[in-house]
Image (tube, rainbow, N blue to C red; front, side, top):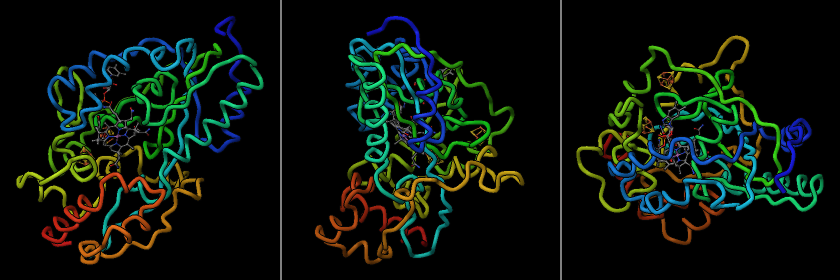
Length: 317
Ligand code: B12
Ligand code: SF4
Ligand code: SF4
């Protein structure tokens, strides 16, 4: 049901009422930067994430996912919480401390979809959180949620970058927002702080070569970690927050002590009691299963987390 354009005011109120930090809308146009994505894949920067290469044709147009898609509603959910490294303990990226974000955001997007279906009977909707082949940052940028930092993260000038992105494809033609504006200027803090030099400038834009990114190595990469990259992993046991931690847009200001502030989502808070690095190496499948139930950390598998813990210990954690 494409039809005439409708106001997005009530939709946005509903999204904020559901707890999202921000919301914006863009047209469901073909992916604006598919060529950049194809180039990234062609260079092999996706490493062993083969599904990303397979997804190229599907990522070309949102109508591959929802044939009558007219708009994309982009939402952001803040996951920030203090996450200092503790010697001898696993250091997990902040995004993975609480309940798996896919589940949390998908649940909320489904509620938003149900609201749209009541308001606009006969409409079709599809929620995407990392699960569907779509360039999430690109559409969130078009919908005004943030701009691309040199670390490639989407940055909201007022709130920083500690947020997840969710997209809701809909057949309703909602009034669209303008793309977000902003830039890093002369700052290079993330490039200098990246422990493995994974942020590179090529073809006139900043890119992350996943093959040397600590986040990829500790989460997605299976098997041995190349010896020359082990030291760069430092104390990170799952993921890496460095290029966001050093970003001036994420630093506290007098008026906003934690920039975006602490996450409003209780499920994202760290509630699990993780064993220390030495115990992780002795953990069995049953303990691992209990510990990672409902957590994004399960993705790396027990073998992966043991390997990472061993490297952390070798690095002096
Ligand atoms: C693969 C992937 C990874 C890989 C590769 C990361 C990367 N930078 O590409 C790895 C495993 C390393 C990774 C790590 C992380 N990830 Co990740 N990841 C993804 C995933 C599944 C796909 C990203 C992708 O397509 N990369 C391909 C490259 C080419 O994309 P890109 O560098 O952003 O390039 C785009 C722009 O340059 C733009 N572009 C090109 N030219 C131009 C020109 C102009 C003018 C403009 C405006 C734009 C533009 O187009 C390109 C293609 O979209 C997305 C979810 C999704 N389905 O989209 C999450 C996602 C990007 N990840 C996310 C997160 C949270 C993380 C981590 C912070 C987790 C952690 N703490 O460990 C780190 C951050 C590392 C980093 N600096 O990026 C969030 C990011 C939220 C945000 N605020 O940006 C996402 C969106 C998941 C989500 N649903 O919230 N991730
Ligand atoms: S997540 Fe870590 S390793 Fe990856 S680009 Fe950022 S700082 Fe570098
Ligand atoms: S640290 Fe500096 S260069 Fe990197 S994303 Fe933030 S503002 Fe941009």
